[in-house]
Length: 279
Image 1 (cartoon, one colour):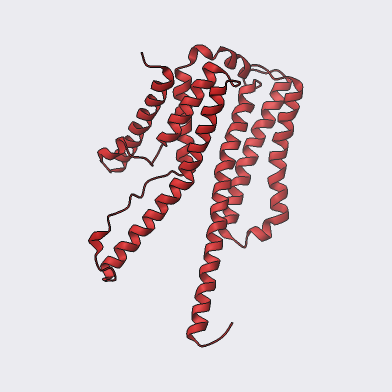
Image 2 (cartoon, rainbow, N blue to C red):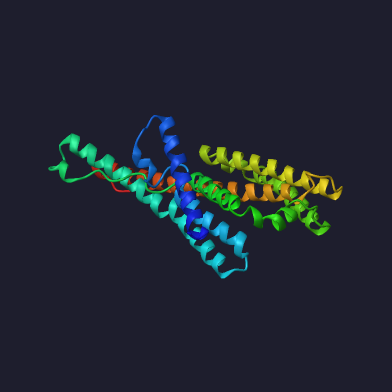
């Protein structure tokens, strides 16, 4: 018999590819390549490594050396998915566009010598997250017999020090965005994209913060099920995932602004040069 440490990731990969193919078929792109190709929603790479790490966690424990190895590998693979491989895909897209335009304009002598580069290599952060969630679900389904201690922990009413910590975090998540906007609103309005993203981040932070405050208050009264630990765990997990996406998007806006500034400066220099003027 195959070890589950082999067939659980394989099942996660098959499910991810089937879902990916179904999504593309719904979009109208019927192609068998989606059954094995990388890229797209959800990330099969993430599903595979997270299912392996999750199954190891459930069956070996968090203090297992094997879990440490699989968790580190999962982190590296997921980072590579929306980092290096995604950048390679974007570069391939731009090169294909450039070659096509040069071939049409006649500036490329032998366009047939250039084969089309593969554009879908990496993933958007959301595709990586959905793939990781799929992998975690597969690992959970194959480890149901190991979940009793985890279920007991997550459905328990937390102790008061933990409740006060949840209340403090929730209150900070509500107050911090309001204070930030009060101090930097005028500066943020200078960049429309950053301003809109900031409003969205602030709104989500306030909603999750209110949820954590609610969770803490009902926990103080020992009201089940909302006073149980699962609500605060879910809220904090959702916040971490959301903030990772938000940080990635914010960094993208900064890169775009820097690129635009360089392009504008270069154009200005070219105009001055053509006009025979010095800066």
